[in-house]
Length: 293
Image 1 (cartoon, rainbow, N blue to C red):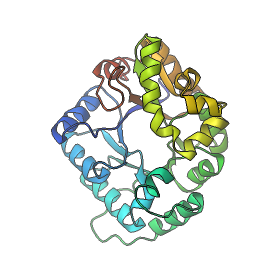
Image 2 (cartoon, rainbow, N blue to C red):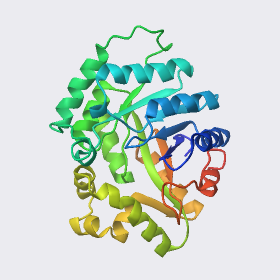
Image 3 (cartoon, rainbow, N blue to C red):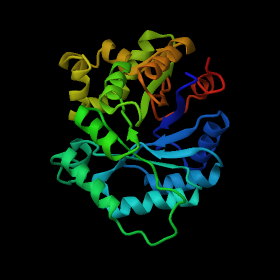
């Protein structure tokens, strides 16, 4: 995967601030280019990335993603510009519409026509007032995109797309839709275990949360999974979305993404026994860029 940059995606809500800084330093030490953090109901991603920026020196910091329904467009610009300026430009702003399960049911915010809302949101960001010292260069924006229309918007208006919970076949489709130039920052869940029962049991627990989101269900159906696969969290679904096995098996999946057109793959380590909240340093070390064949 020499032609494909490699980063790490992590959900750090189970770590203390001190532990998270140590984790970021470890990711940097291993040679990964970028650390992506999500946003659900935990820490504010911009405050979190600012702290990680102070603890690292070269690691790029990315939101994967910051929820556009949670923030006014001007506030989003403020957060991204602040982190970028304070870290010497080590910031990628991943934006997305999240899911009605989070936005509407939990936050109580109206969730309607997300594609149109995001298009208008980008316009407002472009026109937002920012009076502090700006970063040396504009913060790259990427969109959480699964379907063709969102991928087209990502290609037309931003630096690229950040697909999540997808397959190499989806990566190929995304590259075809977007064309050769935009960045394609693909998340891939990985689990270092040869035990099929362990991998599929833990994997099903991880994917259960996402199976409730209409966006992922629709995307998975288009990838060839069935309603039965999704409702039953089948072995086919787990094997398709999570790369598990020995290092060679996982590397083969990452290579498939690169060959399909990914410009960056962010591995999302899943602990075989504890899921996505725990650090599995073994898989981080084994898949580090310096270790990759």
